[in-house]
Amino acid sequence: GTGTPAEAHPSSIRREGKNHVSSRVGIPRESDEAKEWQSYKGKLQEAFTPMFAWIEKTLRTLLPDTFTVLEQSVDILPLGDSVLAHPFTGFVLNFNVSTVIHRDYQDKEICMVFQISDCEGGELCLVEPGLVFRLRNGDGVIFRSHQISHFNNHFIGRRMSLVFHTDKAMDGWVDDYNDW
Image (cartoon, rainbow, N blue to C red; front, side, top):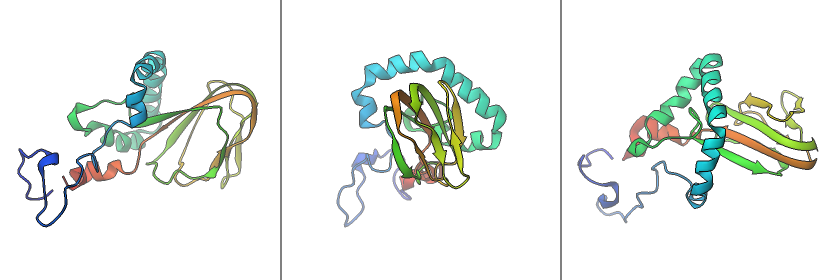
């Protein structure tokens, strides 16, 4: 934080009269799941590299302002860390999941959802605009998941969705490194 020596490692910092705070708190890091499945992460990255490149190019072209906002979170990751799906800092693979109506309040700007499936049903429903997307294998949708309630219908068969997002919590890191 303010007044901290520049050479001090976050784990060694103590505020007078305060208990130790874990240096993991407030610092962007890879999820425990990603660490646990590291070998699969590499295989996914290799398999989806063309798709990730297409997403980056398409978003940069179609939504340049949004792309720039999302990219700020990527450009400032600690230790020069990289992301798989630039400009998003995260993505989730959902296998055979039906969701209840929800909003992703912690998502920043937009999310992007792609469906890979061999199923009947499973439509993506956006409540407030009243839209129902019957996504075919490989189709994708961009929407503001923090502002629009959404869910997907039940389905028969096999269904996987890839959800790309950036957490709003990254704003604190972009602004002032979460006060480190």
